[in-house]
Image (tube, rainbow, N blue to C red; front, side, top):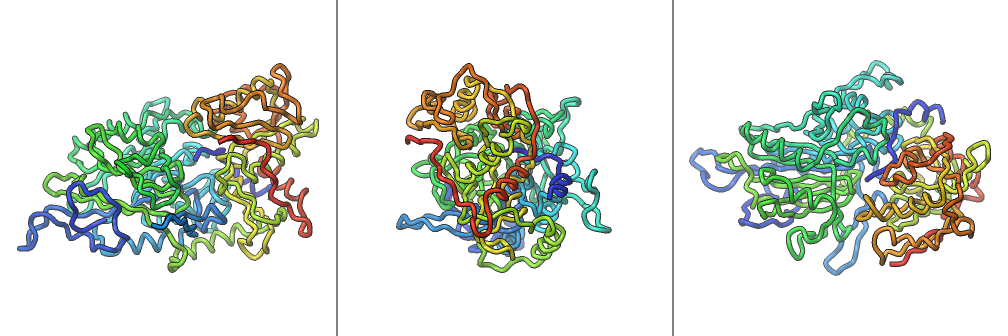
Length: 607
């Protein structure tokens, strides 16, 4: 998901404190992993010592891990399942100890198994990974036997040089090696970035594709991130880079692979869609192929050459297994496995040895929950314990107290309780004249990465908010800005939440206390923000007046589709968003008087 990008600031943070015989045309959900003994092949040539003509290749995939090595806390760690009677079950899921077990179990009985990912493996990570520039996550992915991943937008949070270090290894240029006598080895799987080139040379930043081979079976993987990556990453993160059209890029490299004799091709695309239901087992091919999914991936899928046999996607943190027609009108599998390692997708690709191509009519796929009632993988437990020991002195420090869960990431409402807390913290910290004189604060919803959960995550006790938990909510350590904006620019910014690039998928800013307005979702475009209702402290916004507005540096640069916020003048740079958040928790809560979830009455929503 789009979010405030993290910069190279860990030092400041530390100092701060399915298978079997198939029917032609059967594109249906596969049976649970392990239900079939894969790899024996089917079709002509059984027995008599001949190789079978076809062999089933198991493709396991996931996306948007975001360094969540430990199970995500609160509602962010659940997946929804709809039962036949219509009831919805919430299932706790995720954590690499369980993801490793799930993947290893699924691979059993599948001699041809490849594991791929759809980007955002790192970035916007909890403290356990983010504090160490995501080295722990790369190490975990190596242990999971990941074969290949596309880059996502968050792989660029700390810039191209840091991404190259994650790929190639070497200790951090500022902080050095984190463990005595140990040098960071880097990823032993390729990061693919086919549509990212260097501005100066025009050459790809990383490999555009890779070919997975086993016993004569060859499958090409092309990896791209969304073309709009520069709009959702700080300018420093994408400096000197150019991002190209996803469809044109994939089609170009599919032709190149085809010329090289690689006829089986999978695209790994860090861009996604929105299914009509959030349940992981929703059938988005009902009533027809791809009818239950919308969003950017639909048009992308319809434009990608039929040479590509399946699409593994991500970015929207949704769960879906759909077929979307390719340019020739034939259905083609498009999958996404939610986020944070809560699901994995098991896709069966039937490989024809005679044509070296995938039998598209035989492709089957299904999402599976990474449940927490299975054994933990001991190697992942050891990895987590090792890094937790290093992080503990910082992570366990109490910052404040809460009386109940304060939902942020886990809230689907336009106005989120935790969004209000964060915006209020930013306003309070930057309102004094010498700190910027802020009158109102805006927080982008994608920058809220978790909930504040009342239940203890360790030994700190229920209701205690630790530095590690606060960091997980706001992991980017963005510097705050206070700028001058006219009332007219303020109104335009609020309208940009639901128009322009944000029309199809609104990004509702979280606003500080005192700002109120009506959001009418029965209207379309900018009209959804009812201009006459926008008030600050009970007074209508004056288009000609100048207001002092606080926001993080990402929004102040016009990020997330808010060019009006990028027009600010008379800028003052303040403390980091995380410092202000922690200061607010300390000032407004004690063990005997914890902070309660705030009312959500700033945005009146008409639906």
